[in-house]
Amino acid sequence: MRTIAITGASGFVGTRLNKYFSNLGYKIIPIAREVLNNQEKLDEIINSSDVIINLAGANIINRWTPAYKELLYTSRIDTTKKIVDALNKIEDKNKLLISTSAVGIYDNRETYDEKGNYANDFLSNLCQDWEKEALKAKSKNVKVSIFRFGIVLGKDGGAFSKMITPFRFGLGGIIGSGNQAFSYIHIEDLLNAYKYVIENNLQDTFNLTAPKPTTNLFFTRALGKALRRPTIFPVPEFVLKLIFSEGAKVLTDGQDAIPKRLQDLGFKFKYNNIEETLKSLV
Image (spheres, rainbow, N blue to C red):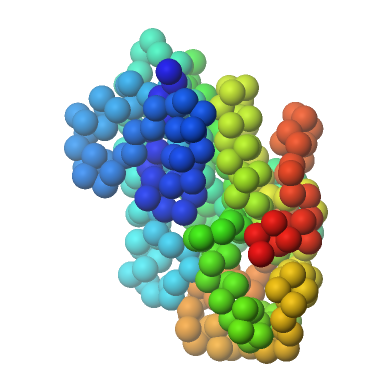
């Protein structure tokens, strides 16, 4: 039986990964916060695991005060550093670390594959530092893959559960201009991508996004159509800035990313466009 250790196991993606891989016969070990603060216990778990999935990090959708930006940074970098330190002690066992990042690493000027240009802002710099820390684990005994998430859409949790409520009441609408890119992935495709990378023992950087990105406008229209509800209540950008401060950029400055590396390797997406994705969810 192969063993997978997961940081951030109580979150939306983490709980789904736990259930998914448990059903496939894997042993799952959640790495709780108290374990991260106990180096001896952490070393023991890392040593006994074949795969480590690093999902830990404070919720990016929030008001970015200076204190919260510090929390966003430390919750990702410090946790990853502890995982890397434990992996660097491994001498004779092959491991695979899959560490999370986000398509927010890119600027929003073009459609990008994994070789796209990086932005020069807080979110991109956070992602870059997060990835650099994870890659320090790469060695003859440890492979490292980076998963750059788009917005993960799935039932009963995550961003979609928050998005859908106003739409159900006919109060949904575009965010800002609606022209910003909206890179997303269905939770089923994300889970299958983890399985694909783990079973093939792959080391690379992957965009975890659907093959056909959309815009906030087309997402809004597609969701309204799927729910048979009007979408006439736009959310002005200045309102989001009042609520989220600099954090509003996550909602108003989308990145246009495609999963070229996964497709080149032969991975098949079940949900290729926003219409298919939303139809399955509602």
